[in-house]
Amino acid sequence: MENVTAVNALRLPDPADPATVLLVDLDGTVTDSFPGISASFAHAVAALGAPAPAPEVLRGIAGPPLLDSMLAYGFSPDDAQRAVSAYRERYEAVGWLECRVFDGMADLLAELSVSGRTLALATSKFESTARRMLEHFGLAGHFTVIAGASADGTRRSKAQVIARALDVLGLEQMTTPIVMIGDRSHDVDGAASFGIPTIAVGWGYARPGEVDEATWTVHTVPQLREVLGV
Image 1 (tube, helix red, strand yellow):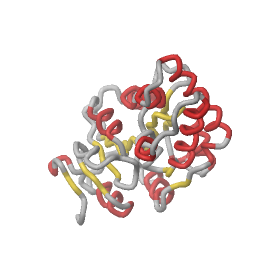
Image 2 (cartoon, helix red, strand yellow):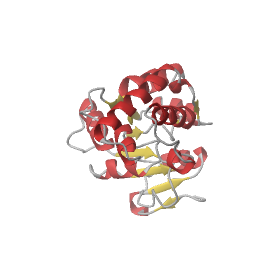
Image 3 (cartoon, helix red, strand yellow):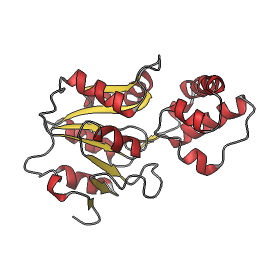
Image 4 (cartoon, helix red, strand yellow):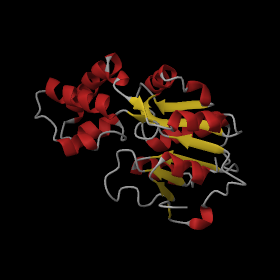
């Protein structure tokens, strides 16, 4: 399997007996959402009169809960909430459209959904926004569950989102083979809290070394297909 890194080869899904439930991240995994996310973050920062974010800061904001990114930028808790509101205002208007589906992912999701696999989206993006994006690209029908952050802030971490997906699927006992597919450490860590292995995709937004703890790392959609046995 060329250029596919397996941290623990004993846990590599066998194409003859693949994971039957796939938890799938959205931003940086299915969609290249960075243009809309970065522009909306810069808009929010400017709205509060703060210095414009450096490119390396913008690069790290796609993936973590938005409030965490605002706090990490240096805003006080109150200002961070205001920045989140400013971000949401722009993103909900135009930012969510400033994205595209990564080449090959639409076909892969379609094939997986008719192959007997169960697909569940697990994203830190607002659940309603994630659903709108998937519907816009004609992908929503491939997912049995669309789990995302709640508007009231009570569900925002990746672990909380994964818990929601598992609950809706009725998989609290974790007896079904499951794998997470994502691009950031939040995906790896969130899945690990449930004992779920992760396939890290190399076309997303992770910094160098960020997803080294993933069970596997793939660099192309064909490699992802190979690991999944498609």
